[in-house]
Length: 245
Image (cartoon, rainbow, N blue to C red; front, side, top):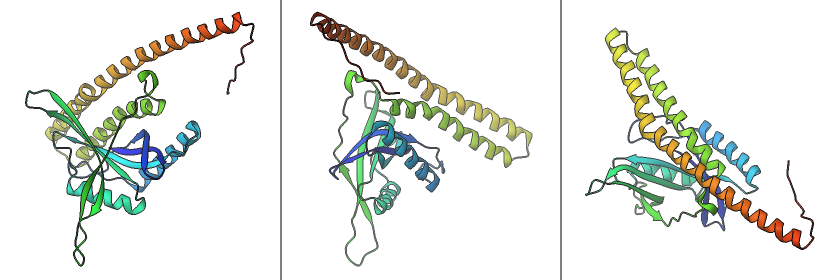
């Protein structure tokens, strides 16, 4: 789970350029809570990106995953989204349905972008329902990931390890039995191995692919530079370069 950073265009289109992964405060399956401190930290990161990218980057929304279940927002998701929209009417929510199997047992991934709207009649208690928003993924030149996205992805294992460590320490504080302590330690070790297998290995593979893409893009750009330099040389034109330090 985490927050979405980007730029609002024409007060209608949320251009998301990065994510801000966060440690879960409440690990219950039906709870996704973000503390004021986490919101503040994400706002500071948005300011840093705004300075780096020279864009009006701000916190535009939130995201979380639904492992092994449908992509559709739960009543808790809809209520949480409605609360965020009280602060910013343009706030959006993303839900990823992951680790699901189709009828032919192949892995599937679903994604929905949504907001909440009031569904109650006058003089009735406030209730909400979700509306699905259109969503498109804009490819980057040379199919490479941006630096903010790479930074966000590499933070995910650290956050998951921190969650497991906090859970383990909490379990140890509540037990004085040696057998329970050994059991908790074994569960903790198994959880760390699971994170390595399910999260760290795919991220490592992804970054290896990204490295090869960057090498190919660098080779293409180097060839183009050499071609242009050759043209300038033939025309006796001295090249001009601008470099920022």
